[in-house]
Image (cartoon, rainbow, N blue to C red; front, side, top):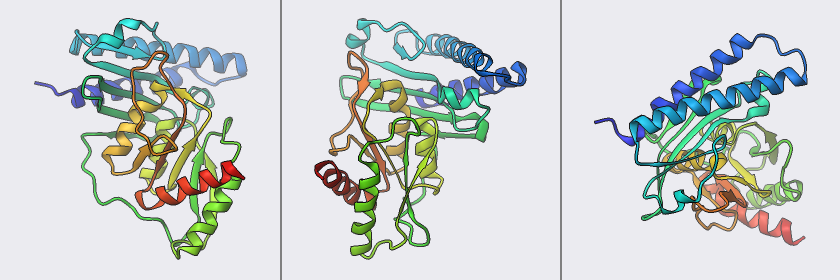
Length: 268
């Protein structure tokens, strides 16, 4: 029997390939209107594919999708798939590679997030709970520590946060290269920057939706990263409305210093 994790990975990969094909078939994007038309077409097509595949594979489960109509009946469901058919829509329309398909399964009773997949089709990469995991990286010593943030909605205190964080890391003898801010599109692509060793943490404090967060959150935990609200509390899913106020994903040995920097920056 195909497991939930296998269903998640296979469906996300199929949707990812569909997105790539649609972008190729659409051809050159001449202007903003064309880019928006491509984004709308692709997000809808990916949603329809995922809904069809998940409904066929797990007909009794509820599905919460960015492109679908929400329904309070999911609050009573024993299993809820949380889906973003195209995360990083803006980047997709620009022809960039930092967009993703997110699929995750939430079981409200035990509050378990499982079967999580982040597919990055333009990067030829899928991150899944089925992946074998080596040791978790430590804080780098040969380059600045890098914190990923939203390009359009970074935390207002982020410049002060990285300034404080650089001092904390230097004082602790962990890194004397400073701290840089980088921006990447999809939440899944942001977490992948950490998993790929190109970044070390991700912070967001202006809120987003569960479909933005669920799959990257689950993948981050699977790989041994620290993923939580900014205050360290776990993120819970299947709320009404399906909104997540903030998020932090970090290398384990960086997380405590980052939380301290965030608190001090907010207080200053």
